[in-house]
Length: 96
Image 1 (cartoon, rainbow, N blue to C red):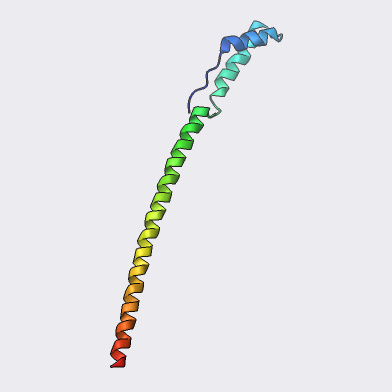
Image 2: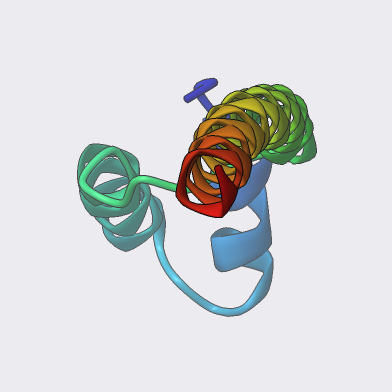
């Protein structure tokens, strides 16, 4: 995940404007800066990358499923053909 930028100077200025003194504003900013890394936040770019990977994986899975279905269809058709040929041969042998 991409690191999110934090403008600590702007945060200190905003806290001071809200009534915090220098020491308080800097302490709150330090705590915020140290704890924000504990949160694993996704950016739009992270989500887009994940979306692209998932789309590729889904496309591959669908492609693999189609190939597997076609393989099974030909296998079943082959077995059915052998059964029909066997039945026809059995009918021909019993009729003579």
